[in-house]
Length: 335
Image 1 (cartoon, helix red, strand yellow):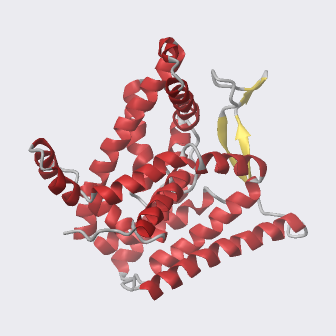
Image 2 (image 1 turned 180 degrees about the vertical axis):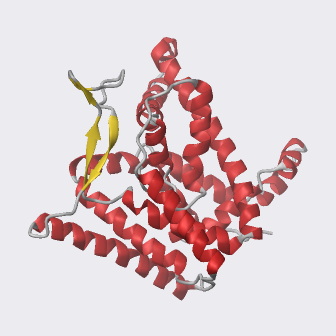
């Protein structure tokens, strides 16, 4: 039997969902990492695993109270509500900050991820040969993904469904940025910017009584895309969490070592000092069909240590590391 939560705890869960959803939209940052750092990762995986045949039988049998208790629906509902709401609030703020203060935002994330590596690995303990090899495998995968070249945009609905499965992996696998994977697949702008914006606009129009908006073929196209992407995401959440729960139970140390390595290897994705390289041909920059420059890769460089801006960014990195350590410290005090 699950313990009932207080209003403060419910608000806290919604806030954690906001942070998780916002992180999922930022390339290079993992929502699963937020869950790890904020102390609800294990409950999240456990809850996703409860979406199974037994839950379906309880629902079909109209045993709603048992269904809500068995699936931990209050927890999941608040986390998901916060995550969805973040796409129209926190993520918009993050978009603005990245556009106007890119170096400092990436510095903050870089520091938090370094702090998170400490957070995840400090109690690991068992660094035998097998786990060290697993760590190196994780690092190699993270580095490889960091330097991959993005593909072109593809709005085929089957591919969009697959993008939903892969993109949502950042919620269940700490260190794996679903948004960055979507950039590599070429569909980040289509799925997390254009489709989300169109969906928000359509909802506003419908709430104001304008049903004519549903006759717009362009808007209908985006609604189909975001619907299929959402279905893929839901399928991915449930299936990956079941797989992850199984492997964590059987090979906990190996999986955790791979995760720690992956987080470490993926630091290259959020290295603050980089500039975007766009695809060009003889005529200049190449654009997609919506007028966005096509990203080819990122050029990373060593910062100028004589610059005040660089030292301010380093200070933000230290702040990010300190923030995780403080969260960990107060988390221990509450136990």
